[in-house]
Length: 455
Ligand SMILES: [Zn+2]
Ligand SMILES: [Zn+2]
Image (cartoon, rainbow, N blue to C red; front, side, top):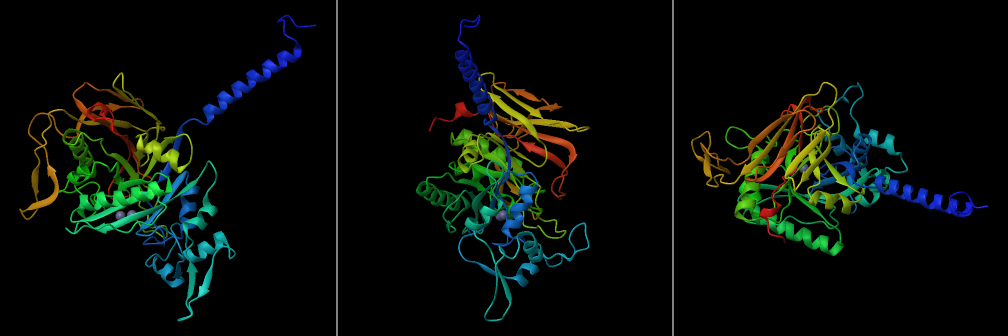
């Protein structure tokens, strides 16, 4: 007998199965939708001037809640055969006799052997002086020890480290890079940057895989100016915050902070070049994993990327779309720009007792682009980012509004070239630094798309 619905029981079961299957599928799709992934895009190991084995460095990040990591050593892609004297490994920790929080002497080689075992760790006798040597594993080998599908991803990377002919230092991160790129010479920083971008693009095209290129710590040795960053419009990313103490992110009496460089470069790009603004990353640039060294330990700065999958392609496409934020501790649940309503809104994960202040920063039309040379302590002009401040009228990188609490928003009034948000917490940074006291998050510039012709 058919039931009162008129369906045969077998048919009802089929309908139930289809319905449940549909719900499961919908749930599954929801679960697989975009989510936040935490990552560090700038890290050093023994492959260049860091003090940790790549596997140990990778473990540090995996065990501290990160989802992806780029090991970006100077001018090397962690490929091929490389042996290092164990005495040289220990020398990297010189002056660090004690492990932080314990009385065990620092010995990264012993720690490495203990964690990965003699079957993995390879040693040999140097035939000329009988020193013990340890093999530095290449990316293709160590990634297998670290990666966990859907939880932790390793990205091959290089910090292309160079000095332009005008003696300005320029360090360029290339993440998800599959070919070693030699340093590219140039008379000026923009020339070095443009040539490096072209060389990386050739590699990306050959491998059919996107490469994320970013200018590192522009204020390090005052190497890169805002005008340099502005004119190479193909460059999409730079580091608005880098964890190394002494890389001059906050600027000094004669040089503007990195955040000012960001606003100047973005204003010049949008007005002078009709080009998209730079997006700002935060990275550790960690070198120091042993003992109590404080110049560049891990855990100071990272990016949170909203992507569907933990794959290089998914992450890099999200970064290129600006769907990420940089952080030194503040966590966002959401950041969203409604282009129709012209509304930038944030939802911040506020922790107990935490006070949050959000500054909405941008440049309005009419800001002066007439920069003046800055004057140094000796009264002479300095070769650095120009000074665009004027006594009145719109200013580059103004604070357009301030908001307290965990749900700040800003309605664009119509005269902004772009707007971005910076959230500052009353909580101190977890890993002490001389350059910042309080946890911060930086969102990406929005509201500028109608100023840039479609490419
Ligand atoms: Zn560097
Ligand atoms: Zn570095």
